[in-house]
Image 1: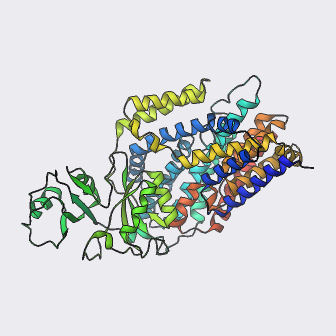
Image 2: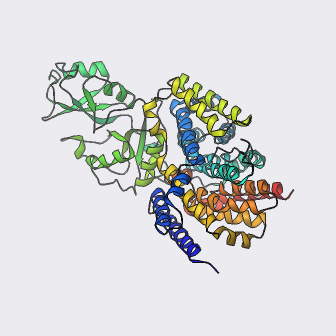
Length: 562
């Protein structure tokens, strides 16, 4: 018979789970409201909630995000992919190498960042083999997810389990860095041929909304405002066009007249240019690129295709100011077929238009997902920061070595972060923008919920039904992970592992199951990111994702029952 506290905890958990399943409310808000509800109900004290929220896995998750973004922002991974596509003529050799590299890197980097880096290569590979990008987008998302399981710092769920082990051992000890490498790494290696098989089996969809490379534009329209201290004041239109390899198609107020028209302070010029020239224009003293933001050094330029069913169709560019809440700047729109009769902001967006957007990868991913857009293959306009990238990679390797040697994982990654910041591989002021705060907040708040599930005794009831079966432990964890996410499943099922005769084996089973979010597009952000450009349906994830689930289950059971 459940007592009052257990009923309250279950009610909060069931309601929050139902809301998460609708995918209509931000997961971080669900986590915050759930944690606050438990505090107001008196299930957990505010002090305990704060201590839990600010625990080791939350801090470590933020540090890992910063380091992985420093590597991602350097552009060296994209350069490696470009090298492979030029080096090998055999497409299957390219995809094999890329899958292996992505899977290995996923043990140390965010799966979302990796998926975003692989999307351009998926389009490149599709061009090379004369296939649809749908053949490769889902496979790259799958390998980014499946690879992030063989280290204790690779996924949010593994970090949760890492912390639970420390809390439940006496004396307190930390898990070795590669605790989950067996069976995790075996699963990774065996998944590569399976994912190649999945790539072959996925239909070669030639839909208009998928074959978006046909719409790719060569030039963009953007606006630039001339400030009072601008160095271009007094220059003619012809001089400006020659200096910066662009064409001025309008000046507001008033239409452009002659090429000898002198540029004045306060002018708003409408410029037609190639994307690689945007950086040069934004760097002109006293010139502000439209619509309202300048390009920061830490961001990259991305081309985003407006799908036929996008919520942006029919809206004007001025309506895109809300993109600022994603920390993005919409810098221009594809010039093809556009007739300028006034300000750029009056142009209505149409299906097939391409936007030129400046921002970091995570923010762009959220913007794409929320608005039904699709990323195009990136142009080679991102500055490759070799020094920053190599320093960040070296710092990451050092963190792995220190962690493997038994140094506290937070200290190991903290040392790596200090190296990256001290060498200016990442500006200190940009550090916080590299953290995916909604995920961090969700992890912290749901840790509070998980603590209540444990302290109230609800987890004991779940333990009773599992009855020491690693098969049921895997299945229940796996189902929870695909329905409400890997973090929540690890928080709920992790403590149950300690009731088994071999807690470490049971904890590894939970780690493998919680990271198997392949069956739904909303089970993992990487899945969601490729859904629109790949034209995938939910049944596609169910069909092809189940192949990987079977692999993970079989290998995990062999490990657990050996």
